[in-house]
Image (cartoon, rainbow, N blue to C red):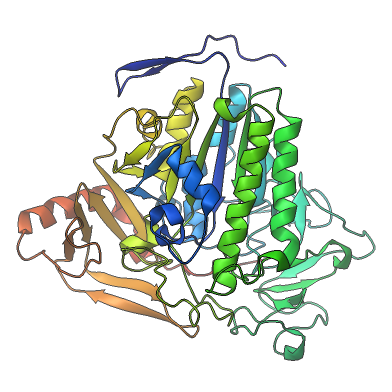
Length: 519
């Protein structure tokens, strides 16, 4: 393979340091789903054993002030890959399985930039950023495009959206895996297609009962969001999903060991439906939610072991994080809330998935690169939106003008060379944005959305002039200091309005929790 004609001294201007690499390093981003800050042993979890992530943290940098950009999956994934906050794209809500591709193929992405630097680029796991064109019919039974390939991935093996949404099939390089042409797939989120059993018509077929939203077509004993017909030979088995994605990730590493590669390993754990493989059942006292985290950790251990066996570990930058905060009940009555006990999925932080509280976006975030990353703990302020600019600096490619407007080059921070991160960042909850600057957190007047216990959402009302918290002394965001520090409120409100402006999710008429599907 012909790599771009360049030498590989890496200049880290922020740190005033110069690093030289004999060859371009591999990059692996491991992205968990609905995993909280407090779900990992290295971040304080006592009820869940995560030895592989703990080892990764011990040998790398464990960040304590790292954030997803949003408290829900689609906008976070959009931000990570594009370097742009999700609220800047009005379509960046939780997408259905048949929504169109959210990323403009003309935009720079992490895979497209690394590809331009000579990297092989692969996606394995959850996609959930849309498939197909906005103005053209989506052909599930032919080539499904545009999709991952059009935004820079040479190879892709993924689900369309989430495991709780149809279609319940794997897609490899734009085609449904194992599809029988005589049994074509049909997907509809507005009305039933055919006579497929649903949770309402055949509740006796369910292994776990679900709320009405998740009570549509039944696949493998679990009802989903949306209706699906056909594709019987292509439908997945839930308990095998972790192993299927892991094998594809390992296969990708093995087949690209002789050239620089980028792997985006977007794991399903521990999004609902939580159906871990039987060998992990009972691994924790927390039920299937805790068991799914153990399964995730084991899979990461297998991948890291294979990197080491192939002699790639010391030339591979590994980044681990999650797309948003944790949630216990999320549509399926799987016992996660009832069996949670004293476990604190969000750690010391308030809230979780969907909310603009800290627990919605403050993430476990670990960076490992033996021999290059200096092990330690960092409180530097950093966002997942910064990965694009930082990785572009790593491989010495320029970010095109007009792309990645929110991404900052924090490569020296990622490598543990400096503890100076961002000045501030934006946190997006459902219909609410907040701002974190240094030790301060500000939420404007409005309502913070939280997930309820029985299929409901509830809100925390915030009156004008908003809520101001000093996080080092108040991680639970309980003491509103806005009346004591009006100048700080004014400063942070101005910064928030400057960043968000007319793009505020608070003003959006779109359904932040579902996405309106027209096809």
